[in-house]
Structures are given as structure tokens and as C-alpha cells.
Image (cartoon, rainbow, N blue to C red):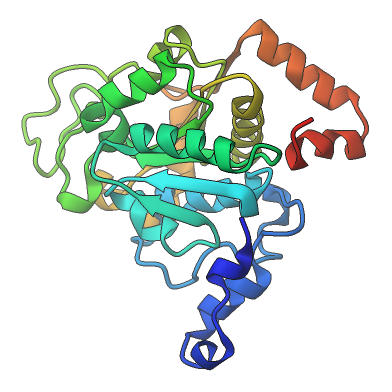
Length: 295
């Protein structure tokens, strides 16, 4: 996708805030970036509207740095906390009706393969636990059953955060929330386990406390989805506002979760493992080749 569509004409550019112009001029479009490069380019508007210490905002930054080809990536989302930062990143982004994101993403992927048969156009769903595990669970699973070549990233803060703190299917059993005063009555929906048996060729469960793990998981997932089929990354993104901890303790909370219910886990099919091994074995130039154009 050309950055021409986000580049304002000279007359209009004068009216735009400097932060937008910086996103166009210094976004992660033309050079390969990684999580290690965060801070050297402009991936998101500084004054985004997320709460202080928001785990979702951190996860979106990590994702923006990890995409193999951000200029040729379309992010598909749904209403929720992730929307607030995704619309202010240097990424192509489309929002959908709540829960429809995987159906829309699958259609867009098919259309892009027809329109650009020789160029990889990555389609990545990025949505919260409510959008994926609750309202959109059926459409998510069916995109996996159909082996759609898209990546799904769940930003799991374990709550409907921006509507006051209702429990979601991904809330932990017993968790007391603003609008769940008696505590949640059933366990987290096992979406990660469902991904294993529903057609995903790769999956990873990570937290924002492990930025390089997040970066590697997102990159692997996008590269494998291009060639083999659906992939899934589930990222724990603690919410200080609803979980009632200080905003400077987000990483501590995520690290504690890694030792408990959010331990790192990764799965992949034999074909996916072989593909990643082949990529690793090739030179840096040949590793970039499949990212740029189909054979």
C-alpha cells in the first residue's frame, strides 16, 4: 500500500498538527523495524487517549514495531480500548461493527490477493477480549475453520474496560469488577486452546512484560499467515484503571501473571516449524525476499 494515501497535499498539510506530519514522515513504512528500534521512529501519536499505564497502548506500540511489512499491512479492529490507539498509529487501519472483525478481515484478504497477486498484503485483526472471545467468537472460529490466511491478535485486558468494567469471557473466575460485584462465576474462555484445534498453524500466548517475545510472536504469526493459514497471538494487557493498581505497576502485574495464569506458550504445526526453520537458515537477503514478493 502506498503512503500516498496518507500524505496530505501541500495546501492541506499546513493545517494538520505536527504529530500527524511526523507519522507520515517518520513512520515505520520503508525500513525493516523491530521492537529494539522503538523510540527511533514514530509509531503512534504521543498524546493518545489511553489511560496512564494502559497495557493495550503498550501492546499496540510493540505490534507496530514488529510487523514485517507495515506499509503493506491492513489492521482490522473493532470498538474497544484498542481502537483508541490504533486510529492514531502509523498503520493502515479499518474499524468494523463489534464482533465482525474476522469476517471483514477474511474478505479483505481475499480481495487483496486478487488485486495484488504478486505482492504480499498482510491482514491482521487486532481487537480486545470482548470483541474476539465474546461477541466475535463465532466469526473468529469460522475464519480459523476456513483456514483464512489472516493473523488474529487478542489484546486481553480481561475486562470491558472502556464501558465501566463489565466482566468479559476472558475475565478470571472470581474476579470482582466495577460491574461484577459478586465476582465472575466461570473460568476464562480457552481461546488459546481453541486456536490449537480450530485450524491455526501458529499460536503464542505472551504478556507485555516480554516485549521481544511479543515482537517475535507477531512477526512469526504474520509471516506464517501469508503462506500457510490462520495464526493467533494472545497478549495480556493489564488495565490499571479497572484492576485498581497504580499505572506505573503495569509491567509488574504482567510479570506476575507470567508466573501464574499467563505463562508463555507457543504452538505451531509441523509445516509452520519447517517454514520458520527455512527462513532462519537463509541469509538476511533471502529472508527478506518472501516478505516483499510472492514467487
